[in-house]
Amino acid sequence: MNKNPIGVFDSGIGGLTVVKEIRKILPQENIVYLGDTARLPYGTKSTDSIIQFSLENSQFLLSRGAKYLVIACYSSTSVAIDIVRKHVSVPVIGVIRPGVKKALEVTKTGKIGVIGTTLTIHSGAYEKAFREIDDRCEVVGRSCPLFVSLVEEGWLEHPATQLIAETYLKLLKDDGIDTLLLGCTHFPMLMPVLKKVMGDINYVDASREVGETMAQDLEKMGLQHPGEDGTLAIYLTDLSMNFKEIGERFLGEAMGDVSRVSLGT
Ligand code: DGL
Image 1 (cartoon, protein in one colour):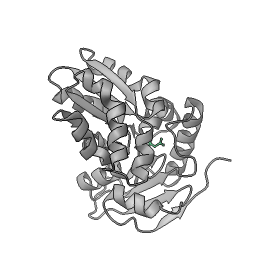
Image 2: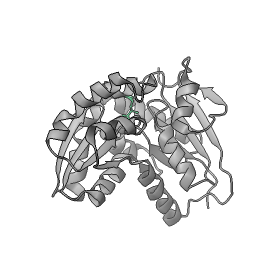
Image 3: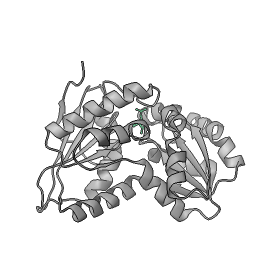
């Protein structure tokens, strides 16, 4: 039993989609969330910068007593999870492997599409994870960077979003994938448009799998929180004008008090 919080970080507030699932599966756990809104987006930046930011984010969460770290950002997980693991002494989970495992469970044809930010897709992290878990499938990646801004703008079912989705996803559709892996915090919000464009295939969002894997880990390691209602403390590195409106859309509930922190130099 361990009363310390679970630490979760993301480039911004999209990672609250992961927090939402963790709170459903592990309602007794306290969570400390860090959104690096001052330095977002991560998906268009270099690997070196994202590794540095991810280490700083992890240190902040450890300074808040985190007993377990969740990298809720797909771009960070793609390039930094192995390095974060080497620098910290608590367990670390990312968002890529849990989604890959789920995709392998649901695919029938083995033809899987992955969409994400430019950094995530170009990092090759998904291909590596598929190779390591089961390399019999065919994986096609497509970066969809504009989706991030469209979601933040709230254009979830706007005709412009539909047109952009048709353009981005054409190759995946022509390839005849039977499973689409949503490799970015923001993309589950676009599910209605994705379904309109891609039709009746499997859609995999890793959030639930992340929560379930964590629940098993915490039990195995004897790290569960014994109490009942867990708390959620949210820290952001910048409080933009509309962060609350966007954040609550991701979290599906009120965000409560949010504190600003400064990281790095
Ligand atoms: N959280 C990022 C991700 O999942 C999306 C936004 C960004 O580019 O920072 O990759």
